[in-house]
Length: 141
Image 1 (cartoon, rainbow, N blue to C red):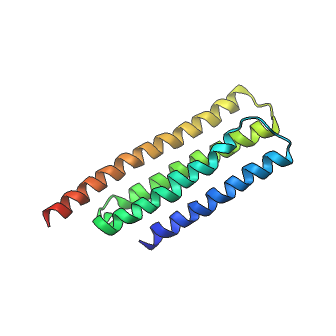
Image 2: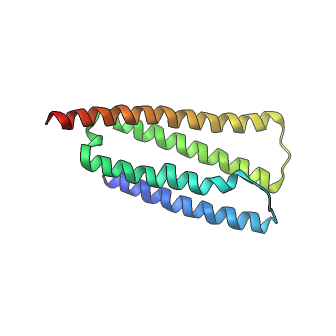
């Protein structure tokens, strides 16, 4: 349970940092338009901090970590979320700095962000399979 709580705290701090980064980075660069950077703060808080707070509660109720696939879910989800957040940050900084990039690099950034979303989706499926397994186990007690 400690590692889940610590991870939730990590994502809380990262989300707060990214919110401040968005505000200050756009202010310093005189940017007033729309940017992907504005979505980093809520993405990290909801998909990271709040999600793992919910996982923590479910762990207390159903002992999710006793499922043999929990570590696979845990690692997969974090890889997917961090990849997505990193690609969003790169895209947002490019927008704010108005850096001209080639279609190849633009497509690569989009592709990597898409891969991050796919990895998160796989982790969600794994999570719900784990949850289903542990709820069934708890019902049989």
